[in-house]
Length: 167
Image 1: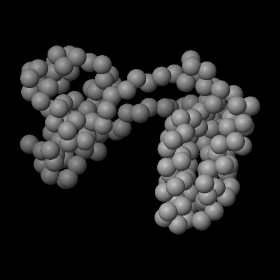
Image 2: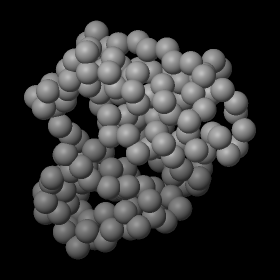
Image 3: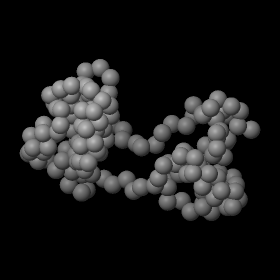
């Protein structure tokens, strides 16, 4: 699957809004019958456009009131040391997102914790002890303005991701 047509875009949009839709509900919303809709969803999954399905959990309801943005600076940016740092970060459940960044710093992490005391303990005992960490800078979320996992699709318009007409 190299291109996306209007039905594929509609399927992606509907599933981003509600991944629990039945195939029949999804088919009705996008204007297809059930069998072609199911085949398209499977093709989107197999080609990697749909990476998976998950429940969005309210972190406050499960007692994770702190969201911190942590920039970690590496002591040295050699390939082996950076990969070692990446592997260690990937194993930490409290790190809910990590990006290798440009500019100042090496990694930007999103970290959740119960409260400031537990974050402080975590930062001192886990983050600062990661391999190759030189420095750490932390900012705390004071409130979420927008926290959506849905990606915009409008830029795909009538053209697929490879710039070809999808008709």
